[in-house]
Amino acid sequence: MKYIHYYIIALAGILLTGCMDKDWDIPGTDGSEYGNQAITESNLVSIAQLKQKYSNIIYNGSYVQFTEPTQVKGVVTGNDIQGNIYNEIAIEDGTGSIIICIAQGGLFGQLQVGREILVELQDLYIGGYGQQPEIGTPYTNKNGRSYVSRMPRVLWQQHFKMLGMKSVSPTEFDLSKVSDTDYIKEHCGRLMTVKGVKFQGANGKRVYASDADKDAANCVNRSLQGISSNYLVVRTSTYADFANKALPQGEVDITGIFTRYNNTWQILIREESDIVIK
Image (tube, rainbow, N blue to C red; front, side, top):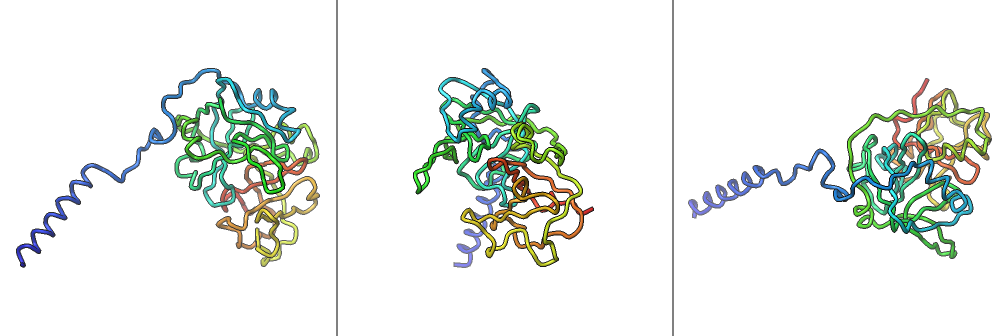
C-alpha cells in the first residue's frame, strides 16, 4: 500500500508539472484574447463627429441604432477599478469623449486606462441619459422610460478590438465655465481635473458615500465649497472601495470622469488616488 501511495503522489506531480509547462493560467499580455480581432479599421469617424451627427437624439433623451458600418477609435480613460464607475468605460480620441455601457464587472482587468480600442458601432445604439452621450443598447425601466444602457457582455466582445497602450493625461477643468452650456456639451465624459477646491462639510467624519445619504441609485452627491450643487457635484457610489473614507479636509485637486446629468457636472472619481491633497 505504501508503494501505491508514493505512486499516486508522483503521478500527481507529473500532471501538475505538465500543466505548468503549458502555461494554462498565464493570460496574454497584448489583449488579443479579448474582443474581436477580425475587426479592421474602416468607416472611422471621430467622437466629436459622432456626437454632432446625433446631437438631437442625445440631447432629447432618445436613442437610435447604427444601421451602417461606423467605427470610433479611442483610449480608455475611466473604468471600474475601484467600483465607483459601474458597468461602463469612458473613452477619448482627442476630439471628444463618450461613455460605453457594458453589462460586465471587472472591466479594468482587460480595459485598462490607456488601452486604445477600435469599436464597430453597427447594430449598437447611441443616445443620451441626462444628455450624457452613451453607446449601448436600449433598456426600459419599471416606469416605462427607455434609454441607452448596458449592452450584454457577449455582444460587446463582438464589437471591439484591442489595440496598443497610450499615455493618458487629464484636461484641467475651467471653473469659470462651470455653468457654460457649450462647455459642458463639449467636455462631458472627459477625464479632467478641478484644482484647488474644498469639500463642503468635510469635518473628518463625513464620508464620500454613506448609506444614510444615498439616493435611489445608491449614490451620494457631495458639493464643493463656493460652487452650487446645481452646477457641479462629486458623485460616489456606496459600493466604491473608498465610499466610507472620510472626505479630505482642506484644498484638493480632484481628477475623474466629468459626466453630466442635464446641466449638472458629476465628477466620477475612478480611484482614491484621484484625490490629491494640497
